[in-house]
Image 1 (cartoon, helix red, strand yellow):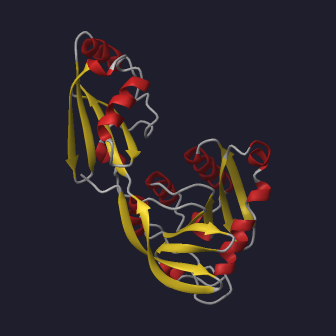
Image 2 (cartoon, helix red, strand yellow; image 1 turned 90 degrees about the vertical axis):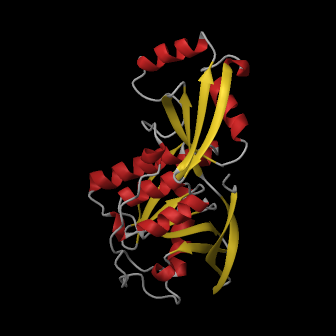
Length: 278
């Protein structure tokens, strides 16, 4: 079974100094739920305690009323994820089949409209050329987000996704109780206003999971900054998409996990263009 923790190489910027090193980050895996051979939902989750996950998800989704109604559970690992194959006792199995036929799509809190591991693990598009930013640009962008989180300032209960570029600084910021929702709202705002993703950086007040990287790639954003750590799968996905992933960005600095060439090794002007084409 996949190890729930990975160790990756990263470059830290703190105290106005770059330092090489590594960090432990959590693994993230696509987990597919099937019942009596029928797909139901795919979740991105830590690859551990999967027996508990299968039974608990089934109970909280109302698929079963008792764990005893799960007659058999097979955990099948593949290159692209893990399938939790469950067979239900009767009459619960027949009731699920009837319910499934009347569903327009998965009802779980997984990846919307996704039922297979292949869909969840789709390859992101490669982003286009972006800008090189100095460390101080990253810190300035990060510091400009909290005062603009109007809902969070009052409730302390929402995430934000913002887009920063040198000329406009915070060009758009959206809040939501769900980090994915905030980023989707930001994508819509940029599309409406005709703002190209490769003109700046996306700022996230959350951890970075693979879905967040996939969404940023779809927005053609080559530079992500997040206040919390990324998952190992997010790092691999950002690397494949050509995205510079900066995380654990706090008041004292940040860490660069992929494509560090977009972070200037000196306090260079941010109008400089990246020489690498992703």
